[in-house]
Length: 528
Image 1 (tube, rainbow, N blue to C red):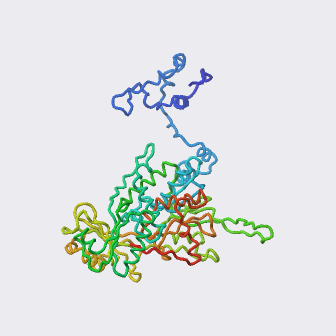
Image 2: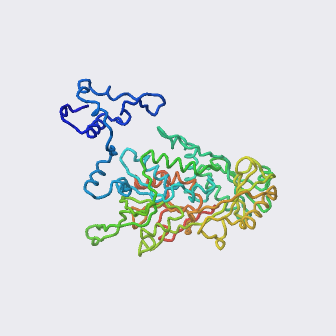
Image 3: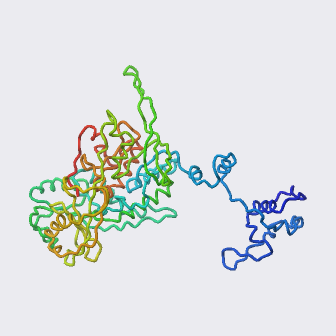
């Protein structure tokens, strides 16, 4: 504890006090002048330092050296690297930029652009699979408060009533994951989220013209394990007496694994678990990418080798305006509605050949209206999608409901802000829902909000997989309104592509970027 070699050496009082602090690890100020000092615990005396000094050494210390006045303040502890930089005169000791430089993550295996539900799900699955092999994952998110994030502004619906097998399978897995989310996203010191899942089927209504499509969808859905039941207009009226069946030829109703949940809780669950597993989140804007020339070797006798550009690092702007770089091996684009614009920074859509086609994802603003209807359907009100495209569902237990509708192509609202157009409700939404439910004729509009779809203008389905030129650039975006429910499956799918080199559980090859280059859209009929 003490170096006996200093015995007999005359030290200045402040030097010796500093020596004692370094070796005893107690605040000398607490014991000076013989005062009785106490710890942070009320009336609990602090042990005298003299009891910690060997008795044979105490005699060698006089009162002045044992408890000297602190003529000079004790310097705070500095990281060894930081201290070396100060000695070399490279930076000032209190320079916050230097502190950030020391701890900013500059390298990773995988960088994910976007920390919404999709980015957090991907990060979770990657670390869940590669937790023990040192896989380093960084998520870049510009707004960790998520005030404008599509995730928290969505209605949080879950359904299997799609027209494509991939969408049905992803949502079936989403339902399974939600049932086990509290367990899956918990940890040793982390409580899993309560996603507040409300099981209640979706109800799709079809006119005589749309009945055949509903029948075809139903055949596919039940073949994949979804529990969906068809109702004629008469049967529909018997089950839901409050509904006006005028113009309805057929209806499909989900019996299991459908309903709605709290997307904010699920997002936080993914994020917190990812952090526990070792994922690093960086608050920053993505402002650019760098590439490196790589050599592509051809087979002997086939042709000469050529070079191509491979993505190697991303430039991000921090809140203080500083621009930093992060080197990576793989980049995942999960920036939601902004994915199309951010992808241009990689050269996608800005070049020739395989880079000539842009990622067709853009923000589309959608409104959600909340109203009170004292004469409404009550508790037995599923999320109903009318023949007009308007939808509504119960919200809580006090006679409140939410409703909305996707506008026609020539009525798309501007995306400069999230202001709500209440005229759209008066002229487009309310007439539809009041016609379908007479109890909605007497309502009071209480509130409204808006959010952005990451809308895929090509075929309204997600883009999942890597780019054919930038093969280390993976996409998970463009879900056009159903990304929340598919986030667990998409996160797992991206993990499989990166770790296993292929889709394992659900084959999503048709949703790859190749279909955009070859102009082969895969349309989903049931877009809400």
